[in-house]
Length: 218
Ligand code: FES
Image (cartoon, rainbow, N blue to C red; front, side):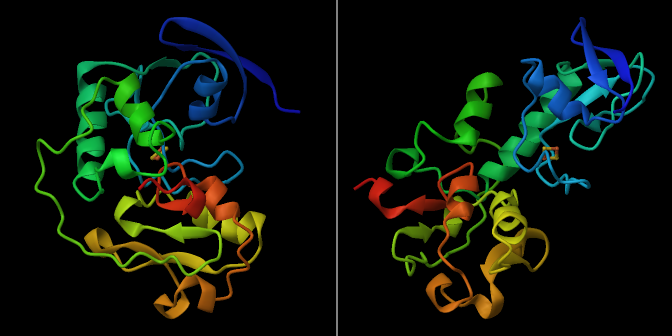
């Protein structure tokens, strides 16, 4: 078992295990850091959402808490004007490519974006970046669930669930940059792919992109 160390987060002394990721140490101690893409079990986080920035004393630049391992004596601040600006920018960029019709979203009131907005007092509307104009066909081919890419935040939680938990590999990321999407091989409807409809991806989705049809709002 790894050595116990003490770190400080937002003026609180906290015991942790050397080598643990800072994000999980903070969350386990009820200190909130926004996050979408981190997966605790994953050895190498993909660090794509860019929401979990913190400052560490002695480091010039903010770092992502999901990639940083804790060290003895580390002093961490989760809030500062610089951190708040970075988180707001990351959040606003996410919203620029997100269907913001929350009332009709199956995840309304149970959505990670709404949690981040509430905790960090951010608005769930576009006020900064031009909306990305992408049209996606809804994939409602599975019997019990559907995939609405207009609500996908590309966090990768579904891909992880499909590959590592279900060991199927039906979905993955394709394309780069602004065109990046989660899709099946050859962009087939899920029902025509190797998807087994185990629904672990639906359970993993933190927003309303993968949802149970019975939860769909009229
Ligand atoms: Fe760290 Fe997404 S949780 S970059």
